[in-house]
Amino acid sequence: MNWNDGKEILENRNFDISNCSIVDLCKFITVFTRNDRFSDGFLSEHIKNGNVLKIVSQIKSLIDNEKY
Image 1 (cartoon, rainbow, N blue to C red):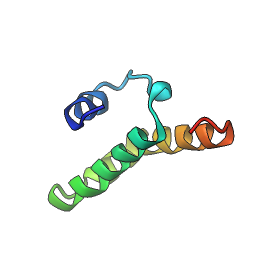
Image 2 (image 1 turned 30 degrees about the vertical axis):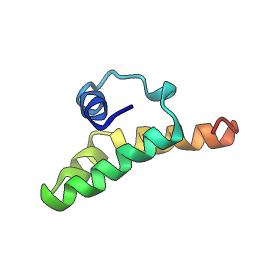
Image 3 (image 1 turned 120 degrees about the vertical axis):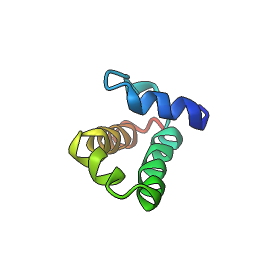
Image 4 (image 1 turned 90 degrees about the horizontal axis):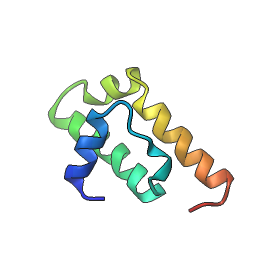
């Protein structure tokens, strides 16, 4: 996945992240934290809308099932 694909994925609330790798999921977390530096509130927006929880939960699921 490239960075532009990630932007499209984040804008699509119905995107199924279950096919993303841990690396791709960590890229999303990186995007949230880096963008927050330039756009105040970006990270909290994605915490509130559930994206961060969805991503962290998927990372945990992959680790628990040793699919990394």
